[in-house]
Image 1 (spheres, rainbow, N blue to C red):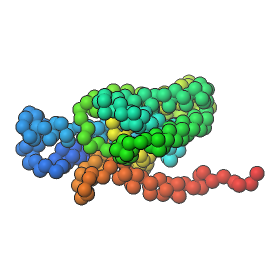
Image 2 (image 1 turned 60 degrees about the vertical axis):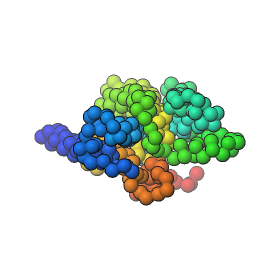
Image 3 (image 1 turned 30 degrees about the vertical axis):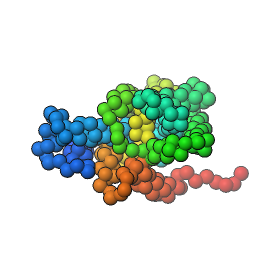
Image 4 (image 1 turned 180 degrees about the vertical axis):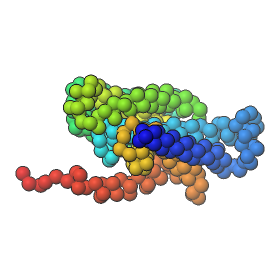
Length: 340
């Protein structure tokens, strides 16, 4: 009976989130400087002809698909990491992949390669994330514990952040500096279907791996020793999740820039609704993060300003207070004695 009730609860929650996403999709396609009626919106989406077709298919649809895909990936990555670390404060940046992906993109902006080759920036960001994972795994070793992986990730992330600052300091072109800073804030503005095509394989591969790790995450709640006694290879699970997070985050950062705290917020919002089972929280977190990022993207287009506010700014303004609140409410769990 309990299992049946849990299944019905999950179905209702996923249905509600899917309905919310559908409404947000319509709102996203309808939001912008150019007002379009419902008839024009449908005609532009289905036929792709005339001004309405250009606005919908070439401008609004790519940013909608990216907000859905990047948001879903970040939410799934955050939920998987929180299940792996058994810590609600974990989020995708913990292993250094977003910072390394950002550095790869910044390097192309700094060198001017991004203007010469259209796919250079996303390709460099994905490569940066992949290299960061390789470096973390090499530095930590194949049998590294989770604390060692975190420390190696923090080191790689700090190194990438320092390299980004160095590139900004050394750049003699003020326009390149401005472009780098704006890109680091995160945005879906001026994205095309080419960006969607570049990010989609990374986001799908990452999501498939993490979803397949769901049963193992549930088993891991029993403790490492018990999970091993039941046949779970904990070391392989950690490597798979860390690699999948890097692939997903790298693909997202490659096309949207740095967007923080979504992977922290969404799982935290969903966990009270589904309980402490890390497998059950994966899909709801993915849907909630997609809805959150799509709503934020709609919001930045509605806020009156001389130029569009960057979406990374909005997510940080929401995420930082929530993160501090999480630390405040759970400070007793992480307090350590100062005594030797």
